[in-house]
Length: 194
Figure 1 (tube, rainbow, N blue to C red):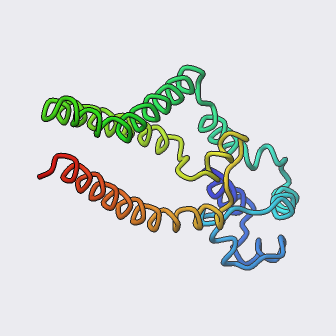
Figure 2 (cartoon, helix red, strand yellow):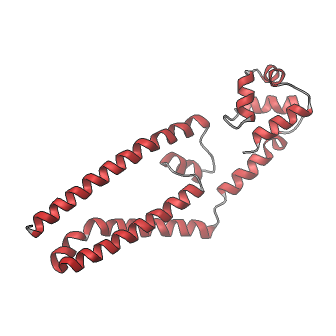
Figure 3 (cartoon, rainbow, N blue to C red):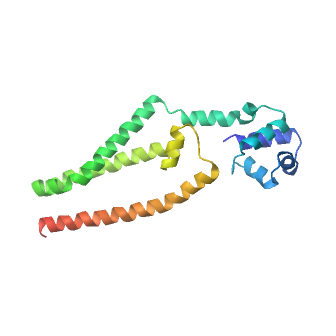
């Protein structure tokens, strides 16, 4: 984001220290430092006080951020269609992965297992492509996806909370996948009578 650089630029143009600017906008010096280093984002009242202090319009102050957000939010129609298409393919393959192993192994034995492995690999590839696009637009969690669709972003605290949850979600996903794989393996062993 550009806002931190803009605040620093206008502060230096006015020959203000971080302490002096903090007094003018009724925040701490640490808050000014956080804004300038893009660790946090000023609320609307602080933005207006910054504009008054720098004698500039809000548009001038946040222009770079607005452009960055527009670029980030402007997923072309082709990219949106591609994202949706990949999501649908992944959903279909995930359904096949869950439904087809027993019939394939039962009716086609080892050939059926080979077909299922091909479906599994295709599902893994589709999942990787979906994840790559989610990372490109920084939409990892449900809240982030909703914010993305609404044309907004999460504030710093919400973003940190969502990022904190990802570690636990990944661990839970890995454990759940392992349990599911074990259950499927035991079922195949029971089915084949090994």
